[in-house]
Amino acid sequence: MNRWTREIKIVSFWLIMAIVASLFIGHLTLLLLLLAVVLLIQQSLLINKLERNLSVGYLTDNKQAKGIWEEIYLHLYKIRKRQKQSKKKLSKMLERFHRSTDALPDAAVVLGKHDEIEWSNKAARQILGLRKKDRGQRIINLLRTPVFIQYLLSRDYKDPITIPSPLTDEALLQIKIVPYGAGQRLLLANDITHLRKLEQMRKDFAVNVSHELRTPLTVLKGYLETLKEQPAPSPFYARCFDKMALQTERMQSLIDDLLLLTRLETREKHQDCVDIPKLLRQICHEGQIIGKNAQRIQLNIRCTDNLLGDEQELRSAFSNLLVNALKYSPADKPVIVTWSRRDKYLCLSVEDQGEGIAGADIPRITERFYRVDRNRSKKIQGTGLGLSIVKHVLVRHDAQLKIESQLGKGSHFYCLFPLSHRC
Ligand code: ADP
Image (cartoon, rainbow, N blue to C red; front, side, top):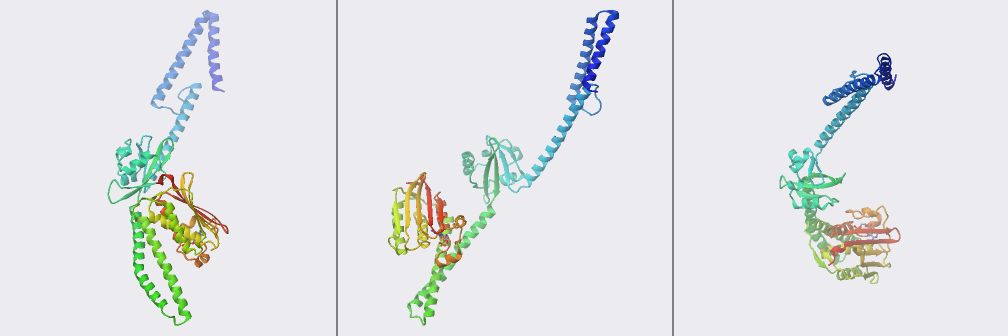
């Protein structure tokens, strides 16, 4: 039977009993009032019992009351049981999360809206020197490096930063902030001292090898030039000397490009106001000598703006683009060099009507030693380092390289400098 029906039946029974009793003794209203008071007291006692049980958390699946109250007790017991189960699950998950974040080799710190530390893992203690009791403190009170404070307050977290470790002068840390949720941020820090050392070793190795190769190469070149000046014993020897001279020339270019690349990676940035129209006129003049056809290069100076930068570096980047356009397009096709303003940029563009570059190769041609189609490239002299140099120079000038090309139609290289670098 439905509990509510049972409950109604009990009340109805006592109601009928009161009416029957009133037939014998009269006072129906009094009897009904008495019945209502008894029922009210009974319900109040049951509510009181429930309140006491709830306050001490005593809810079992044993019968703690009768009728509809038994049902209420059962529902409450089930709700409590479900709550207990999900709490247990949650605390297990939390424990697993803590264990896994503590196993992370990188420091992780959750920052609140006001840059306060909300949570940090074990590595944050070892790498950043944070303590458990620092929770709630603003991170800039603990990590005081100006570069870090500027990064945190800038709210521009696109690129990571490198700062010295707050614990030891010898270590370097890479810091990256990832925003998430409502105003929260996750700070990740890792120790890159070892990586930096390896990187430095690689750079030193490239510089040392290049320098060491220079001397024997100069000696070889000297002897070759002397031999070429003498009458060759046979046409075969003459061909051999020519080939040897070509290869030593190539090796010389490789060494020069490698040294230039390492200089770009290691040298301090150095900025002057560079007269770009003048620089381009010089480069195009030199290009006309290389390109043999004096009419081939068309120079368009569409704006007179100059650039803040390093003249030597810009010269080598622009020359590389021009030399490539001359190398990879037929001698009777024009090469157009333009200096202009384009939206928010100052733009140097070099356009040719040469063989073009396949779409799949475009993202790779700025990699070191990458040459499209080695068979084709073998016929055209090159080191595969030219565009890598261009890219490095542009990065050092906060500029971008954009390449548009179609096979068989030609290529268009754009160097886009932010207008803020105008002078
Ligand atoms: P390389 O010394 O081989 O010219 P770069 O780094 O300057 O080295 O260029 C990489 C490759 O990109 C070249 O080998 C060539 O295949 C391709 N490339 C560069 N510029 C052009 C261009 N203007 N037209 C067609 N291909 C080009």
